[in-house]
Length: 249
Image 1 (tube, rainbow, N blue to C red):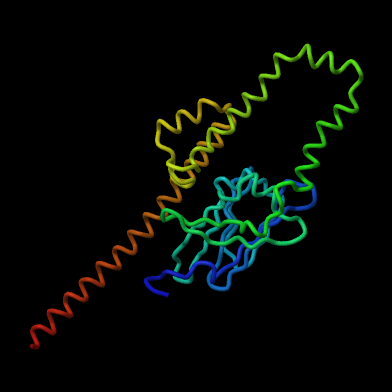
Image 2 (image 1 turned 90 degrees about the vertical axis):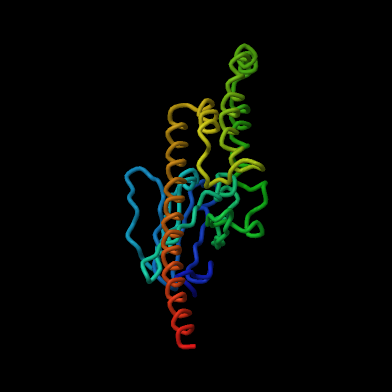
């Protein structure tokens, strides 16, 4: 350990799994070997719990992890935040329900994330996905014979699904190639373009997620400023020490 930094992955462990077969809700828990932790999740009527060495929470919606974070509180009081935004809805659907998956620390562009190892996830064609896909089929079987005619008559409104599909890809470019990494707040022109394809509720959630990213950046800046102050203090001490030895010569 140096300058208050720790080796990622050693002082704590964070685990995740689905609540049960066919359920979208998640269960998260952590265990700290050094210091304490806080599980921060945006959820109606929920405030962040106090720091603790062990914690478990269920009934977590995958969408709430877009602005979620795990905060490791070191013994010195310093806090290191790990974003949970990499646990997307798609990744959450592939988490097993019968065993825990340990989330691994990952640093990218100076930001810390917790990610689910690909080898511990279920295959893309999970039972949950099959169940979701089977629901429309079951509805079609249960529908009366006249239903196809009604469906043909209602053909024009089928343009609605593409609208919702078009709204979803808006945030996707933020995590692709040349655009900023997921935890970097969008540039105003990109954010404005993303909001155009969202309804009011989606826009509010999107803006909350952007504010969470700003909070992460501010925490990172605070940590770097603290390191810079310590570095300047050590530099001054070394300069004084060099001057002292030069004078003795």
